[in-house]
Amino acid sequence: MWRCTHWVWELVVQMQRMRRSFSWCTKGTASLPLSYDPKFLLHVQHYIEIYGPIPSRANVTNKIKIAGLHDRGKAAILELETLTCLEGSDDVLCMNRSTIYLRGAGGFSNSSRPFTYATYADNEVSNVTFPDSTPCAVYEDHTQNSQALLCSLSGHLDPLHSDPTFAHATGFPHPILPGLCTLGFAVRAVMRSFCSMEPAAVERISCRFLHQVYPGETLVTEMWLQGQSRRVYYRTKVKERGPAVLSGYVQLKHVPSSL
Image: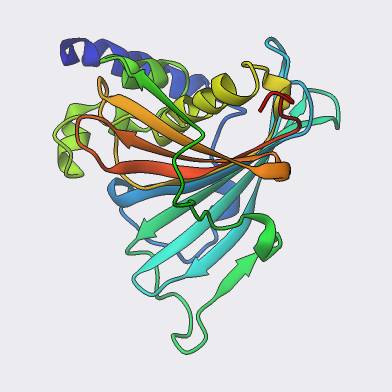
């Protein structure tokens, strides 16, 4: 299957040249005292707020800013916040906040008072605690062998997900599935189980990435509905290997009365 990677990577390079809106905020990070090896960059957490229906076809503008920066000694944690608006309008469709762990980039501040900065409240993203009870629902889904390549062709341009040589250099036997792709499987499991696949029912999504997923593996998502809060806690595992690969919650606007 990886024989076609060369052609996919050529297309990815062309997409990188054409990409405009979906770019990293390089202007904002250029002045930061950070030095790191891109091979050791980890996307460790993600948070999404959805403010209204997202059209299937539209021109949008992404407004990106640094939402947080934290010195952790041997590493730095960088948080990037993206507001997606309809082009030519101030109507915000959604907000994405990515938490990036940069190994080797820490130690840029006073060790007795490490630098920390955030533009949002501490309680905005709560920790997930799973109950001891049996899950309210369990959903199993199978990823395709070509899943990571499809993500690359859809605009996810990290070579870790499409270039076997790069994947080997970072310690993986072959390219891994993007974390956001795995998150998509988990959120779809929640939507199938609790809101009849109605996109407008999803209000917020929080996720912590725990382990890698390889294309072709089977994902099993366990879910707990938290009473009147309309919050579904989920934990996704790889069936073939066992470990949990991500966990978090999906906040729903409404839940069918039958549940």
